[in-house]
Image 1 (cartoon, rainbow, N blue to C red):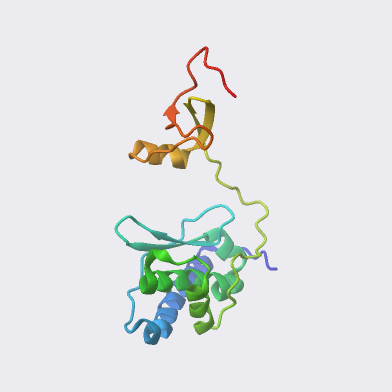
Image 2 (cartoon, rainbow, N blue to C red):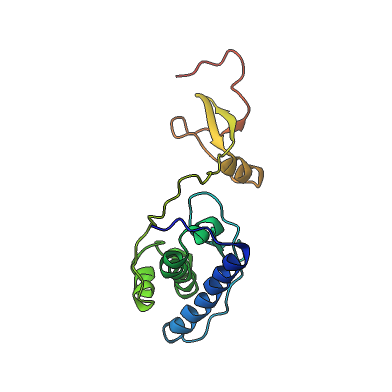
Amino acid sequence: MSLARHDKSQLQLLAHQAIDQTRDLLQRAAPLTGKLLPVPPIRFDLRGKSAGQLRIDHRGGCTIRYNLALLDRHGEAFLRDTVPHETAHYVAYRLHGRGIRPHGPEWQQIMQLFGADPSRCHDYDVSGLSTRRLRTFLYHCDCGPHHLSSIRHNRIARGERYRCRRCGEGLRPGPPPAGTTTS
């Protein structure tokens, strides 16, 4: 495994190669989709240990995100494995919608069309890369306290509701009231 570090111009070249390869893969998928799919926005802003990600917003818009540090470390392998992986997620979503398993048979078929290994995870060296730490928020129900991640906390702020698996009560922000017994 290479841990090459490229200068800024070489890294920009690798990023352009990833974008060009996405275009090429979408052209290869055109017979399967019945049309040439548009190239979604591609960002190189993913951090941590994930190599790539397809983000689908609430309106169905897609963005492919790549980890620039891993592209820098593993350029050739990244282009060979990660770019087809994320592009296949995009094509699978455009063909089948949200109702399929992320690495299910539909995605695997597209990976085979791309001539890529349909592996679920990468094996890149990620030593020294920092990972995101989620903040937790204290909530409670009738049977005790619960620590929710910032993701669930933000979903609650947008109107989603969560219930305790033990007592079935809705979760409320903050610690349990004083004098409450917990089981």
